[in-house]
Image 1 (cartoon, rainbow, N blue to C red):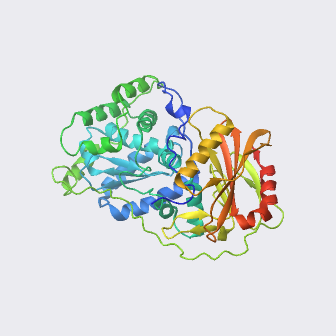
Image 2 (cartoon, helix red, strand yellow):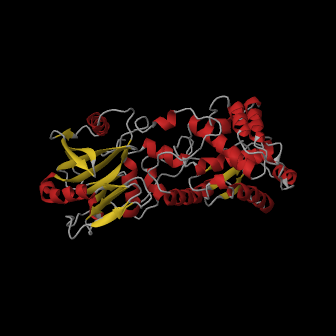
Image 3 (cartoon, helix red, strand yellow):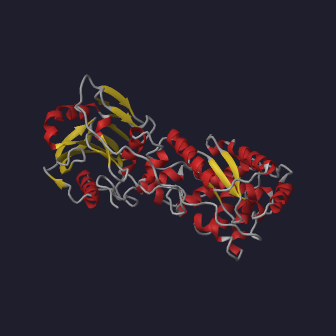
Length: 462
């Protein structure tokens, strides 16, 4: 079911040139575009891990759990792992697979331990997962696929006193096999292979063993091998790419091992249902998408009041009314600022902004004029909300010395069911199009327009 407001799928619109450019072996790797802050990655991962552990069967074998934790912490402490609060659990599942949630919770199937030939291969699988966390692939995918919905969803998690995971689940972002949090692109896989080899090497494991294990998976027949490969699509020439990356690494003495790998394999073989010889059902199910939301919202006086105060964002600063609330944090790529009563949750639990301001970035498909890029953004908004109409021709201005446009739009208001006025500010920036949407019922807009103008004048870029 479509959301009424700003619920367009912008996977292609947010792909940057850097995402598409071919990476050379040894070239730097860094996280891509993301609307979530690091702290929000960690919060989301903790909430998701708690849910996962209610759905899967965690192995009740202290030796195995200690062993995986020991290998994982060695890898997670390496510089290229990014200093995330990693945790590690062994899951009773004969399928060859592993997955890591945003922020660091990592789960390794018993079938993976059974399938690896040595500790370095097991470390390779784990380092690959840690690389997904370090490169923030899960929330990067969510940000690109839900560019307009994420700011309101993060705000809704606060307004409704719900978990972040519960609010994102209303957008279809859960923990199932098709969730964008766990479904990576081939570019993501290539990057995780490369960074994973760095993490392995720093930990003393021979990174070529990662390539050997993936080569083994490609050649294994049967119903259990494809699980990892279906969740982690082969980016093409995988083994050759890893080998090329390894050749760029500094010379090191490899050969680290805990000396407990063989005992770990023996422990796995003793557990009923832990290996393909006695298959169990897949342990990783879709996330529970149910959540409790307030059913009534009775707006109070939400007009801005008092002297404006400053918000320091990651890439920009702006001023806002003191009786409004910031939903987001200073390290996030987007923010919603609104009175609490200005955020409305519909019968499906989706949060809509009825009164307030949303600020974020839009990434066009190609280098075009500000007017063309603004038209593209409006087109995406209209495609998902056909009731949205252009009410005035765009007005040109400058914001902190940058070319900008204000485009006036109208649609239906979730606050009173009447008309709504949306003022879309778009600003041309080197990193993309910075945009703000000023939202209010049409009957209110003229009264609060001077405050919106003050907010526009307050915007500065870092």
